[in-house]
Length: 214
Image (cartoon, rainbow, N blue to C red; front, side):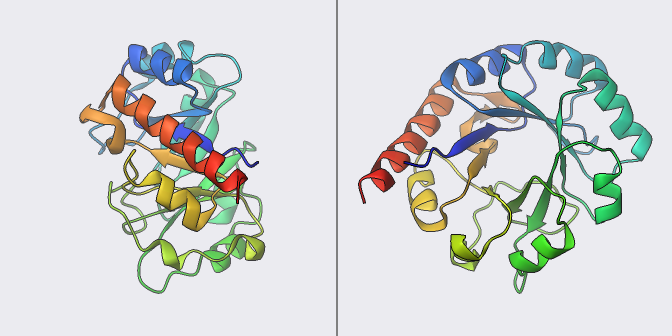
């Protein structure tokens, strides 16, 4: 049975990082883009990263950041996985010599397999709604755009408007390696709900169990 990994993104409070780890998140994401309402500066990032449990992956999200800003964040969280949501090209993404996720904004006509060919060194592609450079939007896109798992060459992280009510259907249809949630587990922007995180992760596990019996 495949176990779908869970990433909870947009964390801004230490207690939410602790809860996400205790509830079973595989990765926790911190937004390093100053235009986001979930932005965390370097001081707060250090406190948040210090609360990440062993074997849980910290992820740093950037949108067209200056290389020096990425390097400063990596000095604070040297074991982080990077996530790029802007117009960054392949040379930029791999220049930091760290594993990275490359976001693909799944607008009309976007070919995920072409994105794979453009970013062969990516650890995974992250399929999200919206347009390139905007970061996450919290909106669901048409999951039927996703190519079949057998056609993909990179692991797929599914994002965009996921919550406990729709993530089972999303996993059943798309078969992603991981799912990424932010606003779908919040009580207010940047403030996570323990109950919603628990319900989301439980729904992911139900989807895994269901696929294991098919």
